[in-house]
Image 1: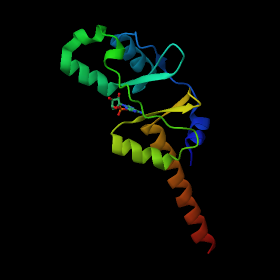
Image 2: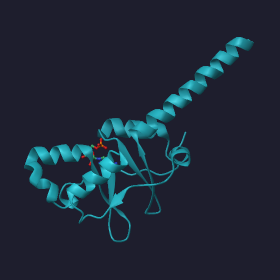
Image 3: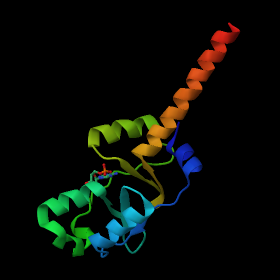
Image 4: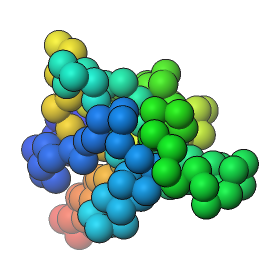
Length: 143
Ligand code: AMP
């Protein structure tokens, strides 16, 4: 199963903001869209960082509510691990576990084409496991 198959099912919308937006604006978008991370893009639309609910916890702990007015650029993760549509879901699970993060921007030829979260991966794996179980039941019933 590939990342492209997940995107084909869930869609390719990605919430993005520019680095000059405030942390408060980023938090509003996360809350309104009910998502856990937002991708920061530069003037050319290239991925410049990622900012997740974990970063909000970290900045509130470090600076308190005053940090909400900071630019998101000051708190985002700049070294973003991205994936491609041809990557396997299995490799995403390994990298999410090893890197302790839950969101993967999908990039093709420098262009952001989607995002896959740990929730999307778990949903996909559950569907696959149900299919495998059903195939096994069918096999036993006809054997
Ligand atoms: P998350 O588990 O996605 O909420 O993110 C946990 C931490 O990892 C936060 O500091 C994020 O900014 C960072 N992070 C999330 N996704 C990525 C990614 N694809 N590459 C690098 N860092 C990430």
